[in-house]
Picture 1 (tube, one colour):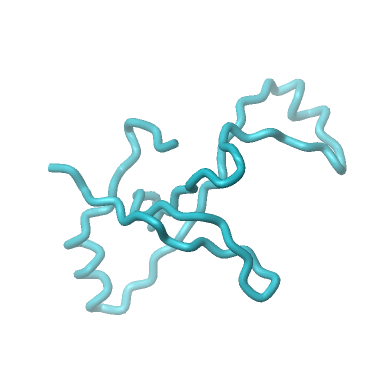
Picture 2: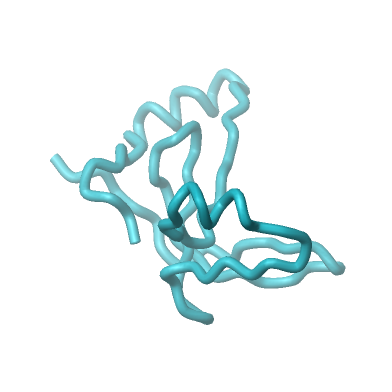
Length: 92
C-alpha cells in the first residue's frame, strides 16, 4: 500500500521525458516489513521475512521514485515481471 506522502508521477512530465528518450529507473515494491535492528542482525541464510502484502495483492511500480502504476507479479520465461493492472493518475 502506498504511503500517503508518495509522489505520483505527473503524466505530462513523463510524456515530455519520453519525447527526448530519457531513461528512468523502474522499481517494483513487493511489500514492506518492520524489524528491529536485533532481528536484522540475526538474519541468516534461509531466513524468511514476511511482508505486509498477501499473495495476489497488487504491487506498486515507481518511475524515478514516483508512483505510476500498480500490477500483478507474473513469470515470463523464468523471469519475474509485472502485468500492469492500473495506471495511477496524479490528483490535482
